[in-house]
Length: 340
Image (cartoon, one colour):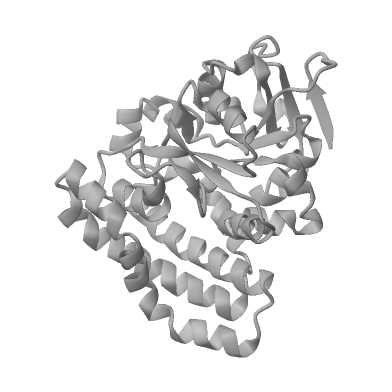
């Protein structure tokens, strides 16, 4: 493992942005453009986690765009949670935020995160907008994963913030020790752990990030299953469930879709107020919940298994999981065609 870095600064950055990519600059280029547009760009350490500098193929100097811009070489990436944990250890700021190649934050995002942490919050997250709203599958994926953090959601202190798109105090993550990769695999488990330790979480009131959601059917089905298995395995293993508790949760798994719909009623009402698509989205959402529940039961029964390795297909190769029409609408069709 080695580090390629711009010139060293004696003062610390205010926020370290951890941005993983499995291959070239093309995957993260739009995210970097949004980071350059941050009002607080000069306070950011951008830490790109990549297999190698050569594979990344950086074709421009970004050292002047940020407080610091570094590339952390980690070899072949098989687990995003593992390399994120490595990056947390390497980060130079007291605050770290996880960024994605398919999530593009507002210009005030970084400044708002820094300000919110100054009030004592352990985790801070933005609201989330659907970046590819032209697809029913995209809306179903968005509502299932981020509906409770939509741009119409209530801001303030919350039980959880958006997974993969939130910031944390670095010391709180370091305190998790060797458990950090497991906790980062399902950030909801990490955030539950932080709350149990007495920490508070905050959803930003005005700041949002545009998130690209899965809209290719095969990818959408596999994402639901492996996401469910990852969640069920992380819960049962992390909390050291006994055989009886596992059996109870497996037996109750058919009720999971109903419970998720019940919990989502506020989000569904807000969605209905914004659009007339809800009757078309409900069947896709129900199917997603059912497949996720099957995966969840599998996780309770057999643990995480290969779910972490399989899940990287959707988080690190998101553009391949997007319909062609959505790629065209996002202006990414030619980029993907040139590189995939």
